[in-house]
Amino acid sequence: MPKKPEVVAEPQTLIDIDDVSVHFQLRGGSLSRLLGRDTGSVRAVDGVTIKLATGEVLGLVGESGSGKTTLGRSLLGLVQPTSGRIVYDGADIVGLSERQLRPLRTRLQMVFQDPNAALNPAMTIAEQVGHPLTIHKLASRGDVRQRVGEALERVGLAPVERFLDKYPSDLSGGQKQRAVLARAIITGPTLLVADEPISMLDMSVRAKILQLMIDLRASLNLTYVYITHDLASAKFFCDRVAIMYLGRVVEIGPTAEIFADPKHPYTKALLAAIPDPDPDRAVPRDLPRGEIPDAAEPPTGCSFHPRCPAAFELCGWERRDLKALLERHWASVPPEEYERERQLVGDIDGLDEPGGPAVVQPGRASSARDMNVLVQRLQGAAPDDPFWRGVRDIREVGSGVEVQFEDGHDPRLRPSGGVDVACHLY
Image (cartoon, rainbow, N blue to C red; front, side, top):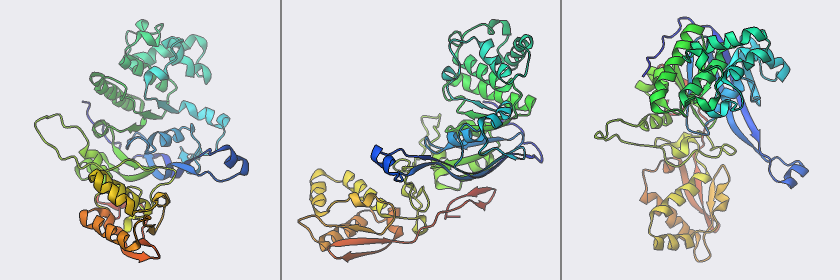
């Protein structure tokens, strides 16, 4: 495994990401679009602020759907932010047209996840690695092939005569990714956004590609944004790590600090999920329950609170959490008990709406008293469930039962030790 690169002393800011959000509008049905109704939006990136130093390797880590790739693509102008500023080398690139972005393409490059999809199967390696030089008019036709040979040699595809006229189908997976890296560096960029560059490669090749990227950083003074869900590779490759969840950065700081003393419960869960190579050593897997919520309707307060084992009053409980509690309970009881309790409860589809309080109506053969007894029974069956920490009061109202919640708040990044963390525990 490659060694972690040295941190550049007193670095200058290369990119300043200031409160960037990327929201994708939902299309909805034909009638909604015809009437101009708001169909909502998916908050892929939701208020991210990061400063990236020259020569730094910043890791964006999180589950699928956390917004890592969208944020990375927005840095290159491939996705236009809904709001915020991205200042590169002193100039804001948000809102620039494609013509205005064209001169920046030589300095901002991307390495895609799948080298098989990133390379054109109908073009030779020489043609597609040299294509950026032709597009940006950086070299004459006679010099392109020489520049391509230099780039291929720099990424380890040597002797270059063996690779120049080959097609992607003639190369292995690792060789294809080296060709992709050659194409990315041939224009002399300052920033490389690497989107899971080793996830499609064999385990035997991954360390070599990471070492190649480290060597390129040292020789070309590159700055990396390394997008990954693999914390093990981020530990060795990155200077800093930003943990993303549902479009937000929930923890950011030096890699060594985050691995030695993770603060956010989500960061702790990610570290607990790293496989242990020793089959005889049992490691506790306190993984978060459930899945990432819908980014079109994120949870109230802290977006991680429905899955967090340490959530409490301030985290933002709501009626949707009560429905999730009911469903977890019914999934764990015998079928006959489920049928009996389900008849006591009326329609619970209204609990899908965000916010609170939650009002649960009884079924046809039950009353508000029966409902109250059922809710108290749920609490007695799982008194340690974090949900109950956020319940302020349970009372009968009319024919149903109302569950009131404590007021929740959305946590913001705050300093804690050597990192910044968005969690009410700190």
